[in-house]
Length: 248
Image (tube, rainbow, N blue to C red; front, side):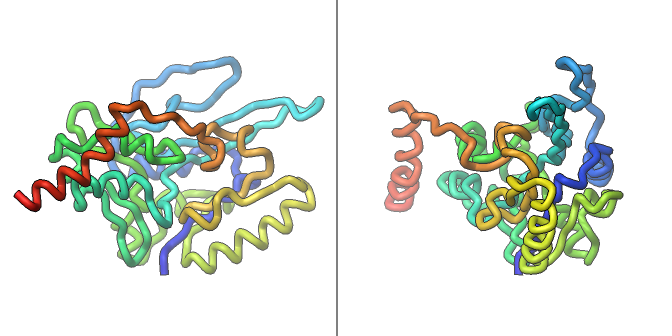
């Protein structure tokens, strides 16, 4: 049975404990950051090879009330990961999905095969998650703390969360918890929703419209970008080249 995160943003205080715990567990180096934008405390500005998790801050007016929405952004570990589907066109071992947990993992093979098109892999992700280390070429993102989970431990972000925002367990258990919390939260926030619960193993409870959190909070927010002829032929040609190579 796949493992699933349930992230209840109604309980998030933006303490960023999850963000720091992730960085510490993976021993990721520091980023040089600066304050940006009026009134924003989000840092760094975006996900990067040294930050697999980022608490995003969004401030907006709801009538006469200023609302702060916090969004602990990370890979969604999709049930059917499009990044893997694109990667498999070039090399089937570069991006894998762990059968026991459902974790989607970028292996070291992503740095070894120059024919892997990072932009195609990133474009395939409806949540804009994959990042690439410019120095090593390694693709990176949340690993579901697969080493911890295999040892019976919680992911570092879940272990560090002091408010109950971050939850982790068997998928059926997390879906049940998500439904219970949604029913309760809707008493205060009638428009509360679960983000793409059927398609991902990282399910968010949102109290506000998805666009008031992040441009990629749900897959439906992603604009469909028309593919130019060159890109279309490149994608189409990959499986054809693989067939030709096999015949040759």
